[in-house]
Length: 382
Image 1 (tube, rainbow, N blue to C red):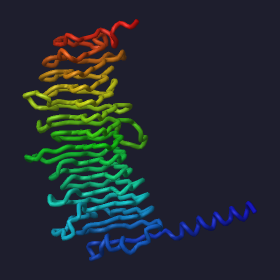
Image 2: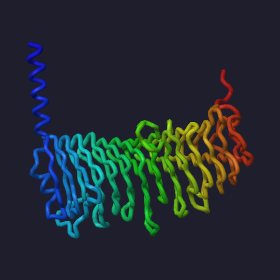
Image 3: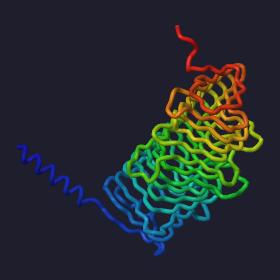
Image 4: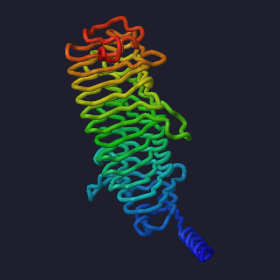
């Protein structure tokens, strides 16, 4: 009986494998990726190879185990007209086990975003995908997505990568950038979603990372195959306002990947700078935050928020290094090496209603304006 069950299982597996399909779509020869997908069995594993330039809107809706593999140079281009008012050039909805690899997606300002992934889609993977135009990649409606070596050149719209509606996104390597224009852009926007990230570069965005609506971002070395570990925020054009904004009961957690921020903020200071934590939010940085040369502030903690900075480095800023305001707290836990906050306009600043703890764990802070500066991390305990 056991041998019969094993044989039946083997035959079933062989039939399932044999049923997998492979198709090629050559858009330069007049074929259509969207029409091909519309005719396919959504529950049969399949690989579709794409060639040429496909000028069309593409919908992947309700598919299971589908791979869209682009031949080098294959492109998905937004059509000149949009009579159905579609929001995405490439839309993935209600699907599981979807891989899109090597495809370039071009969108235009009238559309919301180049790529949208929603409807509770799971196990979706974009790999070596490039997109330019409006909003880049939007993940919504509790979907689960991997973005591996994705490049977004944001030429219109607000954010390069967005995670909404309690979606979960893993980002590995890649580049988010924008051209020099008058627009105001964000690299990563997280609203009530969760993002885990490593090896990413975010360049010349006014708001490089924006986390709000109880969202969270973790920087962790979670993928051993990744090319990079640390997340780099650089601003060679000088247009940046904030390296990271954490607001609305949200959190930024730096684990086994460092966040390196250079040249953040604007010369007038204010609340521009490398990291701005506000409105009941938290920054858990430990020794993994490295800020240098801020044009604005280094780290601002405001409005009943908290930052933990044991072992981090904040140096060379024009204005404040660590600035704590409006019933907020910051702590430099004991670490080796010590937390370094030095060579800023003012290294440590707190108002009368806020507190910085762990002064003994902070090295080289020479300009201090904070009456509520505790040597240790607690008041005297009973």
